[in-house]
Length: 264
Image 1: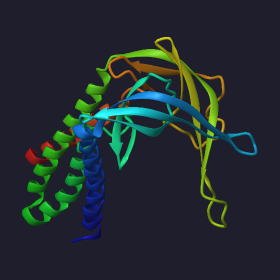
Image 2 (image 1 turned 30 degrees about the horizontal axis):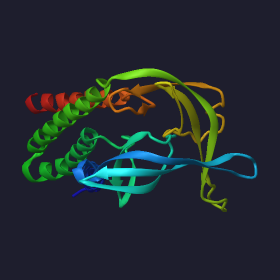
Image 3 (image 1 turned 180 degrees about the vertical axis):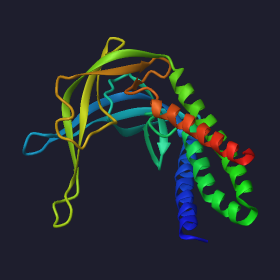
Image 4 (image 1 turned 45 degrees about the horizontal axis):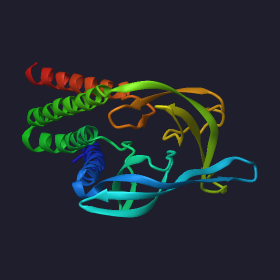
């Protein structure tokens, strides 16, 4: 095998592992015993600032009555979303802990598409060497077609959700830093906007899932566009990215080029 072939196989294997890891995580969270409903019994804001008065910690400590699998029990959990006593929320068991179901993880369709891409990258050079380039191209075209279909399906499913646009306001910026100043490295700094909005007459404050490493990217008082998922009852910061649609089109274009090369 050439160095290029070995590189493609290793890259494909790495991408494949990432995809299958996300698939396993998704399946594990979808198991009935891992999906719970909760009712907030009490909520307390936990906030901390550093010496420069920068916000460095902001979350809510909740005591929640959990129910699922025929059992009811109380559990203390942390949430970056504000909840009040009596609010109901979806919960999921994740790594031995019970956490709010934020629905921010990688979707099953996206994870499957990543897995197929990894499989294609790893299999193509091996099959080409053993059975000829044509056989490898056939397998690659099939995987690209499937990857495109799955990616488009994931994009379309998210876009079909009933989302009502609402307006939020950045009320503060959370400063997060990892690492220390060293001779050959500097600490990584991230900035997360703290957003306040009104949903069905109730005011909610939450820490954004998105961040920037550039100071000044977010401004206190700035307005942001959000979406209320009426069916799930949650707040969505961004709709499905057009990048997913572009990725599906790219998969199909590469499959088309492969098909033309097969019969050309």
